[in-house]
Image (cartoon, rainbow over all chains, first blue to last red; front, top):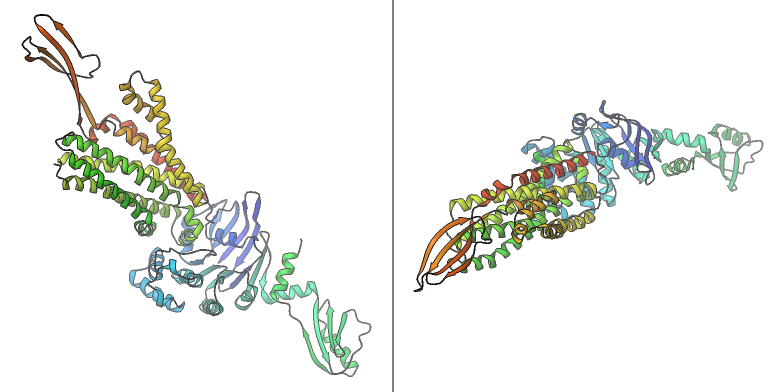
Length: 308
Length: 325
């Protein structure tokens, strides 16, 4: 769906993208993470031809849209027919109503008047904007504008949905609805490329995550694999609870006694079988033995802080 | 192409800027038409009134519609980048060229409507106050409208150029207004001063020297070029008359001939016993029309169109390459 190779974008002396490689496969819900100024929006804008990178290659739906420092306009326009984009910090035309907005957007995709009206109704109902369909967008709250921004991205039922910080400004109900819509997209076999600061949301809806730091992709994998890699690097933290005190001798692990029968064990690997042996040999019973799974936030912070 | 056009036209026709400008123009026409109503047959002939009206329409259009054009142009691109609407629009399957082309066309249409209202009120107002309008005058107004539209389109594209290069809409707007006043008032004043100091006579200063200076030094300013193009709307016809006043006081015209200028052809001589011979000369400005004036200044028309193409070209070139973030 999206293939980016060695993409370079400088704003004056600032390197926004420094040889970025990124691949989004069909059907993925791809969470694109990174601290402020890491190059998330620049990557998205480059993918859509909204900014001009200096070097690299971008392919969309298997066709090259950017190479040798310039866009292939015809290919880009063709690709955009299958893309829905929801920008960060954007508003729509204040003087239009939601119906008019979706109508004019639908027109850009060459949809007929009837199709446009039908689709606008579907989307406005889906996003709870039907009651305000004839109200000017300028009078909308931030949350309503966000929902309309999502609606405009879904007008032509895109194969690829690109969302830049989509949940900013939404209330909890709106966020829940939003996540449902993303899951619906996955069910329908669509691809979603989704940048966010809110790691909990990414963890909840995304199956693949890419972390960009200083214009380079630090990691790109499934959330589970990323966490495992993190555990391998940072070490496993195992929580143990037994029915009686245990003595840990001749082991390489760091053991912290939290209470007489509760222990925190830090080991370079998953040593649960070995712990089981130690406890069994001392005739004790295991009440709880688990590896504390790191949050995506911990993984993210470790990746961001890595290499300075 | 029609996508950007439709959107922009919808926005432009509802804008407070346009409505405000039209209201000001209409408001200014009222006292002017009232003034003209008092004039026929007293001080000005109908043809002189037509010339005055043409000048008034031109002045009003260049100032108000010209300023509107600069303001619209100066915020055309950067404000859309700032609001993010351009990112939404350009994420759709539309090429940048088609989008900016549609937008420019919509703005030109809006300016055309503003000019049409202005000229329409002029013609309607004159008919209303009972001035006989000739078909020639109405045609002249149409021609004037086209010329003004071309010139004001130049100011619009100058605004676009600022908008494509200056990221902040407020900064672009301020610069556009400063630039507008420079090209509209300050630069012509400097050029007029120069023309005055280099002119051999007052008539030269009024006429071709000033036109030449404006053509040469204000080639980049469409409003100055329009002024030059319309500077010969009236044609001056001068007659040298030789009269003799008989000793009995009777006056007899000896000769009346058309002369290019009255300079040096007047005075009197007395012949004792025969009477007094008086040489008089009088000139009259006759409204000759926009087409008549334009014939003398085709170079200015070419210059104006060339400038517009250059402004539009640079603005589009920049837009096609700019980062929309």
